[in-house]
Length: 384
Image (cartoon, rainbow, N blue to C red):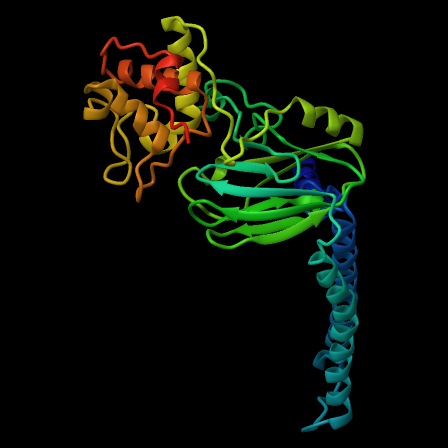
């Protein structure tokens, strides 16, 4: 009996200590609770402002609750204390109005200074245009003539819980944004369809990507590394699958990377993908399923039944089982104006589109037995 009571009491004590200590430990972990210190001048300024404001709030809380607890304990009726009778105290009211005013003024000066600095993107050494799409990011290096898309690379088998989730589940991309360290980088953020938000906590950047508007930001990264973020604006069914990875490298590595990248053409378009060697049916189906799961399944579902009426079914569709096959290919290349079906001519290679079309025409019970090769896509790809 005694042991049972003792164990019960100790369990309650452990629960209380756990409840007190866990938030403190978690708070000390920047990944969990506190604001990132960051690796850019702006992110460090934001961290200092945050910690200053938190310190002020903590001090106010200690004073206010301390006075309140003292009054409750030392002026309680049970020890015979008589309640004070007064109506107003002008001096006290002035004091407790003036002190918050001075605190706000004291916080406003460094905050305003930081806000002004955030908008100062002058004298930048690298300019990158960031364009949000449903559901990927496009990066355009305006000075280097480089342009490419970056999208989620987490295997769909992990998303479906068919494989263990990796370390960077939903935070990994096929092509990261490569930038040099110790250089002032100017970001121009906009959107091609709906409102997105380009957010990288460790860089201290969060800019809304709004169609028809161009929002600016900048960063000067102190040390190399991979810095991850996500779209922070609810932008549709695949909103959670829009990660951002910024890879900061040395200036020499960045220059070498720039030399290896294909350059956009004079009209600003991505370079055309030349016809590739003939792919086997197994290669087409495997690549097609992988790209379909990553790019198409959010709207048309893994089983091809779609989300009618917004996203039509591909199972037994006139597009996926009908002829000519060129209609199917052109639909992916050019999209459908005025609908959620966007063009993929510049987002997918000839091999990827050929594989997706082959997969869609032979999956979901369509069984057309059609095989499309990269050369078939190249022949239909817009040339201007």
